[in-house]
Image 1 (cartoon, each protein chain N blue to C red):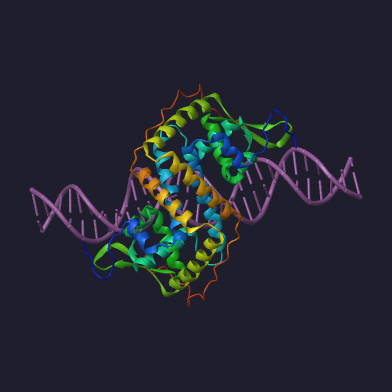
Image 2 (cartoon, chains in turn green, red, blue, purple):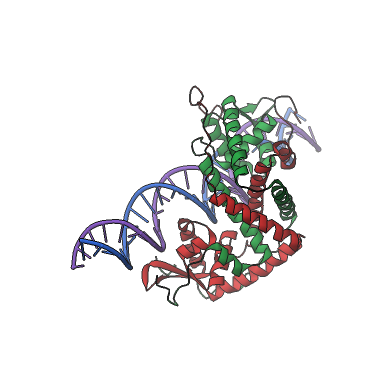
Length: 179
Length: 179
DNA sequence: TTAGAATATTTCGGATACGAAGCAGTGAGG
DNA sequence: CCTCACTGCTTCGTATCCGAAATATTCTAA
């Protein structure tokens, strides 16, 4: 296994985090990891549908509102419009939403789920619900987690973080040492 | 304001989520939002350093272990090696880590923080800690959130989610209706 | 009414993410 | 010693994300 002093023992993130161990970093890091874990999870669940987690959330929000403009969807999801714009085009290409200009304000694009989109959403919702139930997380725990994360998000969004002051740069900008 | 029946009221995500309101979706969505909120937050905090949250986490893990191979770092962070590879090159270019082949196994690349990297990390850690304290989240809440998220992640990673069954596709693949 | 501000969307460049495929170095069996 | 499977890293294509800048439409005020 070549465990010389030159390099270190392989480590799983559990042990890794024990060494990091600051609450602030732990919290961020858990969110960071959980986000990607969910991403992989949903990618598998939605594999055959053309949906991804991002598109599923968009579709769900649109269905809940029976259609919305792109900027309203952006506010609704907390994601920039320039992110949603190409996704909406792809979803329209798949036939899960329609994408039309608002005749009352030609600047706006209104997105609405199609009948086909609602069918897919219904199927997806059932699977999502069932999958979540299979995770074995109690409703209490889930509510608690949601409540804390929600407060955390609000705090993070309000805050204007202090900037890190950069120490003096090293003597010269390094070249990448080995290819 | 053009609030015709054609389109809907603008909505913030708070109201949006009230309509969605399933615990499973709430949980995923909170994680999704919190992840991006942290991303924006750290981007501002690290703006002048050349670091990002991803690079900061990498640097922190490398410092905790006094260096690691790329694949060990990958296991440590739960991120694929092909994601870390280009990031490590950039960090080496900035001079925060060094990147050398393991002489005992020429396949491996060992990453180690430089003195400069450790200085930046120290400055970043202080700011991160202070910023988190300023959020006003109690240590108890933070621990609780971390514990639940950790269990949730473990469950998600273990699970093999059921697949969504696709309903029949619409009659023809739509063209994108308006540019 | 008409110049200029405000708003909605798109485009562009940059930063992470992933899976799949390819290449180079190691090591195990014949 | 020589395949040949395995491991570690890189590259490629795709999918989100962001901020900044460009474009088009609407509104506002002079």
